[in-house]
Image (cartoon, rainbow, N blue to C red; front, side, top):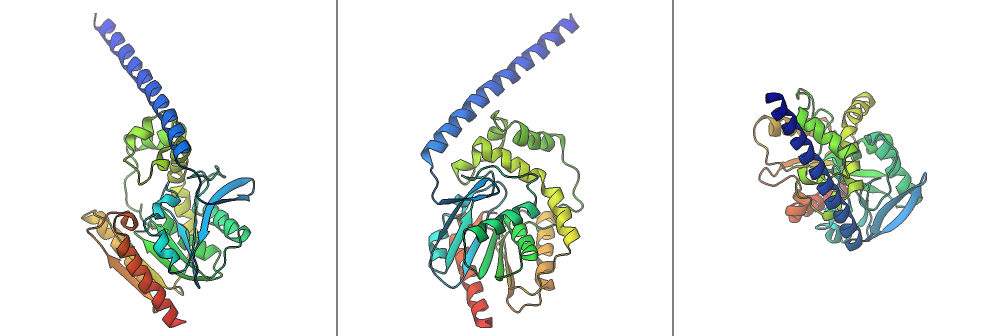
Length: 308
């Protein structure tokens, strides 16, 4: 009797799982179709090694702001500040491989691979220097690595709540739920499972199947990127650097990040450097509080000009 009950419970659970995946995959397919129809490319395309990259370039001024997005995000993340940026200088923003309207690129999606691809796009699209690199979240780490690997013509680094190569030091191994979530993004992106597990995104295009998969691939490559960072012995102490900390996290995590940011500032030998903590603002401060970011960036550019 007990064995029969267990058998039927297992059958019921399997049926529920199959039903959920069927419902989720249909929902994901419908969502992909709706979003790709509603939102069209806003910029141009350029081919790098057989991979079409979507980018936008506009504005006038001495400097070109090169914008690098956060994990799994695309150029829509800059919509709140892009027009104002164009009044301060030229603006270059792009969708990394597999995100937004760009085609899927080479794996793993490490910071070195991303730097190589960005350099190829800037070169092939003839994007003029000097560059002021702007990076949000993991994009802040990517532009630091880029400045190390391709140091020519960079006038400054502006980091918005950036990731850091020591961010995982001392943290426990991922839980079973976190590991399953990671697996679902890379291998079950079509199933609807990561769609329902992910929070509401800053823009609908973030949740289409292709972008969810790339989000997972970028997350999967973080450990390899950290190793690339640490083995490169990156020294950018000669560059102007501004860091905006914008996290509502309290306690040890928040303090750890502030300490890492302060290390970067203390290591700098350039007179133009600043760490400012907007602790009551969310991680996407450039979306929720664009005036703060624009104010700090305007000050940053002015100080660079004064030094030159």
